[in-house]
Length: 424
Image 1 (cartoon, rainbow, N blue to C red):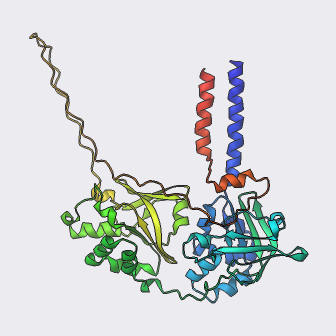
Image 2 (tube, one colour; image 1 turned 180 degrees about the horizontal axis):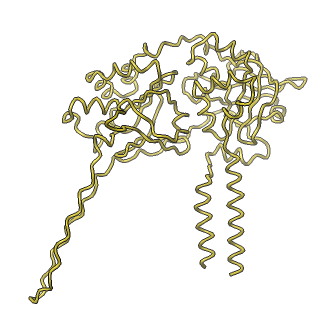
Image 3 (tube, one colour; image 1 turned 60 degrees about the horizontal axis):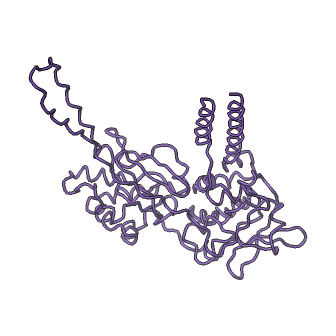
């Protein structure tokens, strides 16, 4: 028994140590910069563009911060959608602290940024050139051929090895064409044309025939997130016959596929609260809940669930996603379980010979929801992109491989093991 108790204590100490390790993994870029007055403008735009959510959802990352003067010069000339692209180039998907900047192999490297993950960066425009210059300086620039190192490392702000590093640089990193592309107003975006091009013709046609497209367009300038089912989703088993719905029910179903807020992918990954939709009203919640695993995000309705597939458009304040299944609100399609049959009265046993008992009535099963879509494959660094894991940093390697350890999971496993040992 003493040996079992000793083993139990060892597992308990291991659990506490791993829990402490897991706790150190969390970071919040907004909180890190909150006490830094020199970066208040930079922090404000990370929040407005929702890049802060994307940064907080990743395990290994470097943020290249701009002071107020540099940020004001950038923001004063461009709309929010362009500012988001420029700031995405300042979020590097690797860990660089001051020491590592001066230990770059061959003195120069190309590193992937958040801009590359959007799918809107042609060629290598989503990469940043980091070069260790003579005299102890480190320069930053676009990876596009012929680009200059127009920015330089000035000082360190915060490091949580090997989770997040925040460094100040002297100027924005500007990729060719990133500031010159015109950004149309959200109300001018042709939503139906984008949906049809993305393989959501059925959904687009329903929006137009029902008039709900006008509701979407009216909400676009203030913030809109659309979850558009692809054409195959409407052919899946379990999708109701829309011709049997009333006009009001069709409108509610379509409005259920949009939220009056700007929620890009990073915001969905970190969201823990129910999402209200355009169908939400006093008569019903009509909300969605979100779960995430790695780089996969799933929406749940209470009746079915669906994977968030691709971003058709991400231009603040509007984002359009495709989803694998039609989202069926519980308020319209949820069914209460059938009541159990009343028990038959108990009677005295019959003296007659036993007869073969009648089979028990089959149980009534609740309607099964639509099958959840398989998880999305993890996003990968484009082929050929460098991978500069810090020397001696097993943590960073594990992070980039998508290995996540949560305190709740550790507690469950550890508690089970400890109880099993003590009871043996």
